[in-house]
Amino acid sequence: MTESVDVGVRADRRGQSPAGSALLITLLLIAAFVVILNETILGVALPTLMHDLDISAATAQWLTSGFLLTMAIVIPTTGFILQQFSIRWVYVAAMSSFTMGTFLAAIAPGFEVLMLARVIQAVGTAMMIPLLMTTILNVVPEHSRGRVMGLVSVVISVAPAIGPTVSGLILESFSWRAMFWIVLPVAVVALILGGILVRDVAERHPTHLDVISIPLSALGFGGIVYGLSSIGESSTGDTPVPPWIPLVVGVVSLGLFVVRQMKLVERGRALLDLRTFKIAQFRLAVLLMGGLMLTLFGALILLPLYLQYVLDKSVLTTGLVLLPGGLVMGLLGPLVGALFDRWGARPLVLPGTIAMSVGTWLLATLDADSALYMVITAHVILSAGIAFALTPLMTSALGSLPRELYSHGSATVSTIQQVAGAAGTALFITLMTRGIESSSDDGNSAVIANADGIHAAFLVGGVISVLLVLAATLVRSAAKPATVEVTAI
Image (cartoon, rainbow, N blue to C red):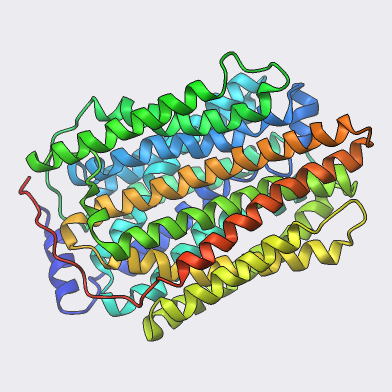
């Protein structure tokens, strides 16, 4: 173990952060913001990409959901990676992958290469999020974690929220390739600075990598999301297999993955240590975070389509309409973190989920004649609700774990968030596609059909939001970390 690791652990026990931790966290936050921004940067560009690459909406959405799905497949391995390798090594590997993917996307000649580039980008992004959270858990004392996690929530929620705004501003004057050319130099600088400045601050426990768990994880998460996406495409005959086949494969593989992890944990060889779910506070928080991310990404994929195809707005207007919601998340993140340190989770999560539900139901009222202020109002309320709920949930979930499970808890939280985001993207597009087909069959115009399809998707989102409010009533304020029997590894 390096000296910086020892110092980091001792400082945390005294209630102080080790020297240099502020600089480290700042760099990680900036790098994470840049990589996560790319989750939704193509949202506003989907109509342009559909035209330029001659692809359908169901195919184009894979540029977002495929990105999220790749992250969901890679993130479970990060618990192993962070215990096996130094933080510096993981950082350089993550930013190198993201940088290479960004360059490939900028020069991609067609959809297939662009999709591959998005996958390479996602591999780097997947390693960055657990790296950030694990570092914070190791260097930030418990009484200050709410404030710092508030900054993390800005990265996790605001970066994807303002992705459409950034792409709208770029697309107003440049081609979609410019979105990657502009990000590329920032990624290169972050890579170089990280290679120089990042030092190790976490305890490492060299462990075994279970190669069987990786394909089980990929088939489990991939099958479920692919199956959801295929439902929308199946009616047009674009899917090579019926949607129920990947769904069944996904559910069965995920079940086998869980069973295998429970057996391997007894020998200290689990790819993803699922003993975190023995802690009730962690289970509930992860469930709610998954629902929030599903709703957020579902809204972010539908709103650009609604604004451009139903209200006939430009990409610049689309980006600007979505900007207030992103700014609200950014402004509220640190404030909510400070409030969490003072009051705990419950007084924030319940009002947050209620606001999120109100915003979702307002989005469900949009039609072909809705005014822009209604779109902005609904999106701001939705964003504010997510901001009030996400930070307390994330902080209380990870804070409830013993130190030995920090890396696995971070990986689990990140996995669930990305799977939920990918599932939300796929589900909302599928519901929209089905609704458009049904409305078109009734003889409605393309504009009305698109409005009806988006309305149908947001109705389902509204129902999900009500279930989240009910679950939020069970949230309690943060408790001391639980004690879980941990096998030496």
